[in-house]
Length: 343
Image (cartoon, rainbow, N blue to C red):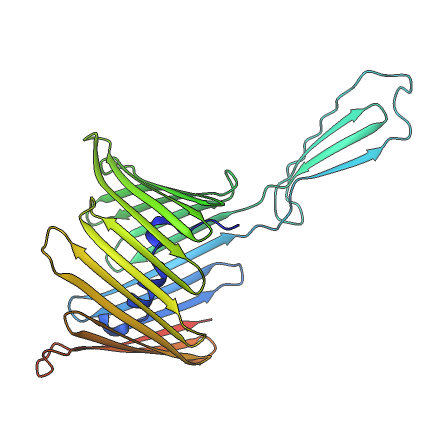
């Protein structure tokens, strides 16, 4: 049984349908992905927003993949022991730490008991991921991930950021713990505050119950709290979330009608802003195995269209536009394009 979704992903299916792959938010965006022979992945991103400067980033990622070598136990018989009449256990330890064929260090313990020898060889599984990014804002971001390395089901992330021009530094520690029917996370900002955010989700047969909280160590006060309930199966999902200290309520629904059609909707009500409810509806239609189209509209009359096509293996084109249906004669419309190259 797999772990339930994280707290922020309880409404992921509906949120992705409503927000993902709509390209009108920027005039043009470019993404290039490549992988070196030594396993290092490079990602170059550039985005030209409708307003503001061009933003970009260069990211390098290295993943030390596990080989699947687990600790094993081997037993062998010694034909001629040093002392045939000896009945007392004589332990003998031998250590070996080196570079083996699987590119992992090993640790061997051998113990002689009577006429038998038992050897335990530990081949630690790797689970290390190192990501280094440099943005056009002259920010250096580093992320170190340890997945299933410290303990089973535990993933740890250490994130650091540095801006030389502003002498700004940041350090964060994120912990993710996954078990059947449980998904818990903890986020620690080590320099600002320091502060901590926690969330946990319990799941059983598709039903999800989650809660989130924030705590400022310096102020010794709770900074935020939220709650959510949901139900999720591969064909459809629904969730109700109460966020921003239980003042903003949202209900999201997603339905995979068939292999070609997906539909979803989300309603949001801010109890502090008034009685108006925001509503957004979206749909996705897969034209063929290499292309799909999306459309959405909200209660303010803003409609958006998107088209995504795989031109050839590794080359993807995305086109999008948004229109203010209540002011078609005004210059409030947006058009955008996205190019993705992957080697």
